[in-house]
Length: 340
Figure 1: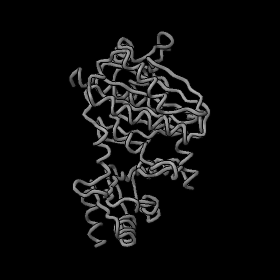
Figure 2 (figure 1 turned 90 degrees about the horizontal axis):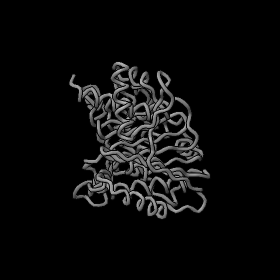
Figure 3 (figure 1 turned 120 degrees about the vertical axis):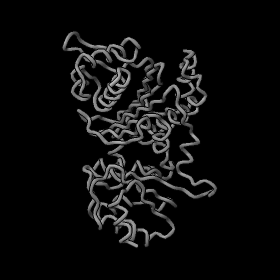
Figure 4 (figure 1 turned 135 degrees about the vertical axis):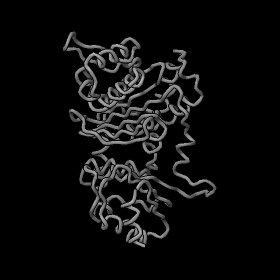
């Protein structure tokens, strides 16, 4: 393995650790990444030298924390997301950052930042909001942190769901909101598709959407988080655009037709899907879309009842919508043939 590839792997491990905990050690990185402590220490120190991490302690007790170069604190009462963005945008542009030379970055920040701040204002039921900006030559990132009831708790309670896992599944569908009169429910959905890496943490869980590796996951936090933390990262050479994210919910040459892609693995703690009950939970409110792609990536075992409930029973009850299975493999294909 070349040094460049190994360094990239260690950097990915560090990102994953920070999705679950506030500080990391070289031992954490070595164990998680299967590398030597020396390699882990080298990468951590390099990130310190680039201004990305702040070291704490000394020797074997050293820990590292992400270093926010800009920090803001606001009371949520009467806060306006447009005013917050206007002020912080001025601070960013004054720093004459090379990363902002990419014409795609500012439109992405404009949408995602205002949507996530507005989400905290309208949904969190908290009292304060903190914003952290992380600036590096390779990427720019922001965190929006509130002290409210938590995004997953809010969705779970409003939809009478059984767990935070189910809440993440609902949020991932798109068009799901706890305030339907005021919101379309698409803010988090689109934001998760615009950022090169998106993290939503609340309570005991983090939902991570990583477009760098084309994957998403749910991970346990080391300690439960009060309120909600949203982190959005944008690479200096990002090719993502807002219109690309908006088009992910539309069908070319078919105006007004809306689609969604549902990753089955987000709706279960394990990787096996057997029952009709699981299928019904996944299908809840999917009839708001015209075309729904059911993505079976990462699902190792599937039951005939699960497939039949979705692709025969639900499809028959909702003829105006069309289910499409993707990444299912030969087992799913065989079970689908049985439903026809």
